[in-house]
Amino acid sequence: MHHKNILLLARTSRFIERMRELKHALDVSILPTTPETFSQAIDSGHEFDLVIIDSGGLDQEALNAVDAYVSENGFIPTLVIQDESKLNNLHLPAQGRSDFILSTAGELEFEVRCALLLWPGEESAPSDIVSVDNMTINLATYQVYIDDVPVDLTLMEYSLLSFLATHPSRAYSRETLLHRVWGFEYCGGTRTVDVHIRRVRSKVGPQVASHIVTVRGVGYLFKL
Image 1 (cartoon, rainbow, N blue to C red):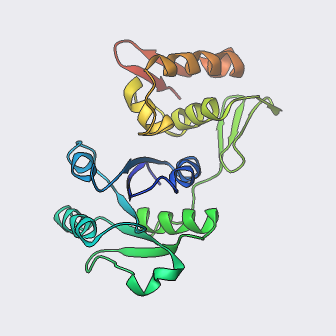
Image 2: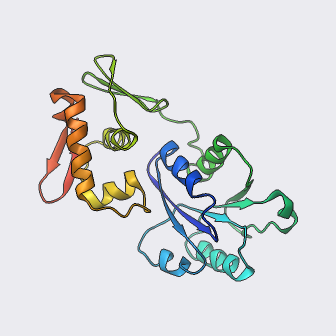
């Protein structure tokens, strides 16, 4: 599995928290948009691997715009969130891979359906254990150990460390790390990345910290 980008089209913010949960469960970034900002989102320069449509409150014009975008870009996979009371009105793209899920579905089902569309044929997750020197990261439990002793990291510190450790030997700019780790919706400055890198280095100790390399003028790289 490798990083994917998701576009969420919704009239309301009722699934924003669910998107944050999904972002931490899978290696994805999510850009929320509305029918009014949809054209800006698809012209933003980002390439999307999945379009999630919260159909509640969307009119046919908005659905037609998604159909056109999906078909014009190689039939991007689509997941439609549908209220059970409106199943008779379910609209799925005529071509390409698509699926639907009830708005009342649980977090795990939502995660699995997205994974099936994002990584067809790769549904088996890679090893949940990442080991580097005296550090062990358990990707399934969001825990980090140094010499078998748990390290007290915040969620964002863990997310930053685990992202770098699972994407080694490649330099990432601060802006890219903000998108990959904090998500498209984050509006803070790039200094946030520097602060979290400093905290992570201090908590994991010098042996592991030496793997987190500052690339001058670019950002950071995890060196194996």
